[in-house]
Length: 110
Image 1 (cartoon, one colour):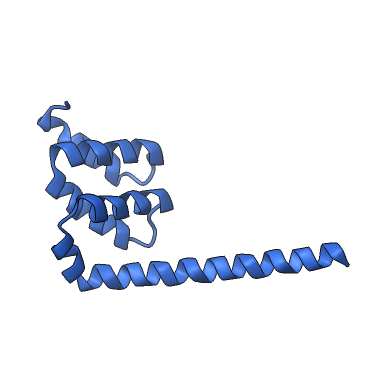
Image 2: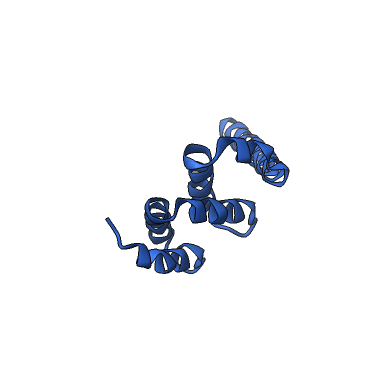
């Protein structure tokens, strides 16, 4: 098990958007073991950050839904609104991709 004094280093790596996503995810796992309440706070921030890497937002969502305080997450209106925006954006992207793929397919047949 990692030394609890290493938590600030893991937090620094997790917050560093220039760091590889894999390293940031490992840091999130380490923080979950060492300072789970701190990871919950960071996960919420990163999930609501529109400029955050998709993989880190997915890691953040997992941290909140699998390890977080379910009641606190349910009562967090800002977080719920952010998740709704993310779902709507993803849905629009999928619809756009499907339309584009359909258009390419129809040209190929013609």
